[in-house]
Structures are given as structure tokens and as C-alpha cells.
Length: 106
Image (cartoon, rainbow, N blue to C red):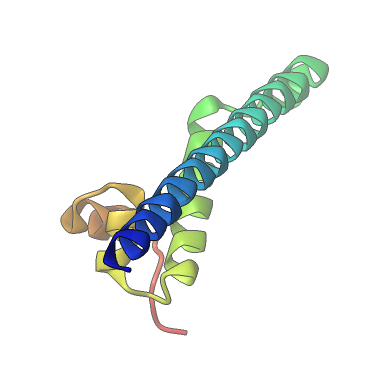
């Protein structure tokens, strides 16, 4: 009976592994598609409107701010969890939050 239990545990682990692999690939593809769309939209705006060119620096600043805000909402304000999710040191996250004037008070 123990052998059957071990086999079932291993099989479940293998199924979970492949399911996670598929999910990771889908997430990667979705990210790449979104990234490409963002790049092309940025370029289209700047090409079509020579008078109102959006500086890359401004786009990156707004994008970083939006990611920080959404991450802090997702992590319910927990900076340690947000730093882990963003692969940042907590002190780096703190500095970025301060730079973007993002506060955690309601």
C-alpha cells in the first residue's frame, strides 16, 4: 500500500511540474506580447505626432510607477512581499516608492 501511495505522490508531483511549466510558458508568451505591444504603441505615438513626442524617460518613469502601485496593492502594502515579487532588495523598493511619492496610507 505504501508503494502505491509513493507512486501516486510522484505522479502528482510530475503532473504539477508539467502544469507549472505550461503556465510559465503561457505567462512568458503573454508578457512578450504585452511588451511588444507597448513598444509599438510608444513608437506609433512618437512617429505620428512629431510635436508631442513622449520621451522614453517619461514612459519608463510612468511604467515603473504603475508596476510599483499595482504590486503594492497586490501585496496589500507589505513591502517585504512586494520586494520579493519584484526581485528587489527591500531598501531598493523603499527608495523607489519614495522616488515615485507612493505612500502606503489608504
